[in-house]
Image (tube, rainbow, N blue to C red; front, side, top):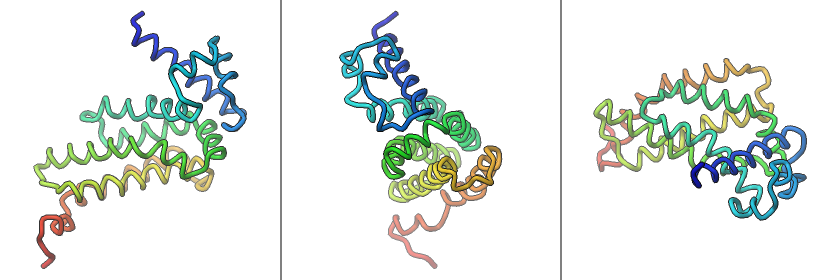
Length: 201
């Protein structure tokens, strides 16, 4: 096994151990020693790869979600991307909820949102190029923030239990419908004219 593969395998084992423990206990109660022991490693091995448990948590979420989205960026539709995100959140709901309860909504958002924003921005750029629409950088950034907040905020609220009446299928359908109904018109919207020094008629 190549060094790169061994490193990834070690990180993945630690990430899986963390998710397993998060299903039964809060993040604040989990120690580096416990995670290392769960994987048959020592503390030194853990700290060779991660600075702390929060660093491991961030890597795990990014590796299992953002890297998958980025690798399929040009071929994945927003409907498929939304389904992937909701499915992942559902499969890891206990771990995500435990993380939220331990570190708070804003901290969890910081872990999840930053790299998802990059995916959304790239996705918007791909659509604008496909539709041959010239979108200013400033307006693209605004849309990226808007849709990132809409998708991640809604999914996190669902994880927190604030939308208990919605099933996984309903959340997926609602988010997909909103994106389908608005994203193309938003990209071609007249609002971006203010960033080209133009004004409304």
